[in-house]
Length: 367
Picture 1 (cartoon, rainbow, N blue to C red):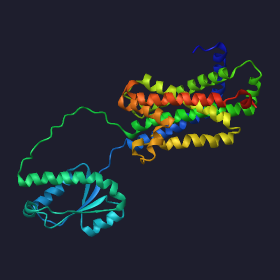
Picture 2 (picture 1 turned 30 degrees about the vertical axis):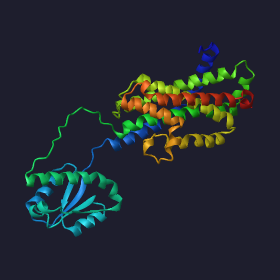
Picture 3 (picture 1 turned 120 degrees about the horizontal axis):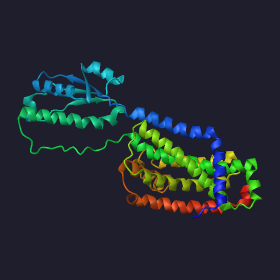
Picture 4 (picture 1 turned 180 degrees about the vertical axis):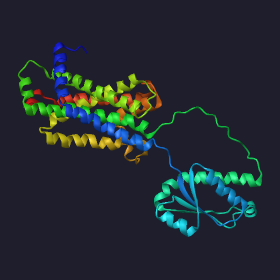
């Protein structure tokens, strides 16, 4: 597509108009930066040891060894005490769980039968219980091997492949970028059309030789420039300040960003054509934006959602954009590897463009 001098001139004019709204530009950068910073501090901290109380009713050596291994573990913060005292601490939230070692926990009984250990938990801590139980069971297995003096049937050799550790912020950044470009694009086209109508700008443009395609192309170029600049600032902040890792190609990443920007600019034009007032635009915009915030995998994977929701979530435009950006940023895949996402993006490009051109009637929008 060859841009005309008129389209380039209009793009510069719209760009200057948008840049005058410094307050909007500031807050569109401020909130994502604050959001990322909060999650960065929350999720990049060191994991605190789990508080576990131990009631040792046995005076055997094997029970003492078991307790000592729990103390030596970096995962647990062990407190020794009576059942009554530790039960009270559990009820007050000072302990994650309480492990009761019975009196019969000794070599003789363990050699003949399995001895049950009681674990006292709060119902609110059941999610953590699934993480702690394998650690407790592994400790028991190691103790059993020691006092029975038996060799395991096989051994595990750990080979360090230096895998990249991914934080929640690494996962969050692509989705947050996709969400940000959706908001900026819809606001940049839809809300601006309504504002131009309110100020009489569209009415004056209507009587000029400017064609609708020139007007739309100019706004798309101007808003795309602003969106890409803002997202570049956000990504630079995340990488340099918050130590977010992007292992894929930045060129491929921004290619998906550009395609996503075109989709939501078109949807914004639809919004501006339908809504006649700012209040109506806000209501319609919420219908478009809010479901995608929670259903497009911005904050957590779509696979973790209820099964009946996933078919709808998978076909939303923000889902295709955020999934493609996340696969590139977190997995380092090529554009060819995210072909399903690109196909979905292409379909939404066609659908959004058709809707934008059908709904954007120059005379009706200008009035």
